[in-house]
Length: 205
Image (cartoon, rainbow, N blue to C red):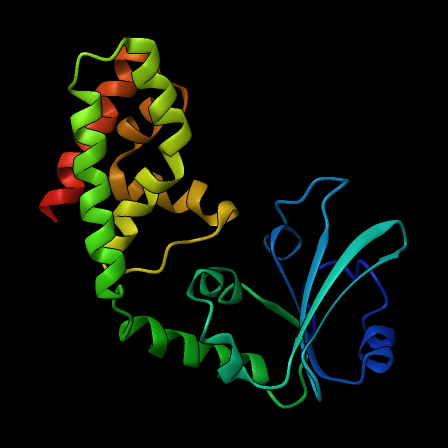
């Protein structure tokens, strides 16, 4: 069934936790893992559980849900769930899951309250970055607001805000590699210019 390295005894995991399906996600699924990376697993079973354990020297995180529908409430997780590699799935539950996620995404809309708060926040940040604050203060503000700044593009585009691992790969093509690099690793002038450009583009979407 599985097409990735068997990091642990998957059959034993299925039996131990009474699972009807088991899949690998995260860096182990994408094969971008390092020697010390966690093994993230998702399964379906008779009860909702989250367990952590060590096996073969690997720290394992296992999330179990009773049904696919219970995954709908956490849109930021959808990005990772679409990349799940099944290792035990006799009833094709992960195929169903990915079909459901595609449907949820196509119908997703940012809640109005979040959209409104994001607009207020962008305008507030713009005012602070164009004020008489020192360059050092402005850079500090950008550094401490970076997550919200990147998230604003997803919010305005009616896309779920991704988690940490996917933000790093999904944000650059959305806001532009030049501005992303400016925000993350640019000099003070580049950070400020990139932040203002991102704010203006976010507001105009």
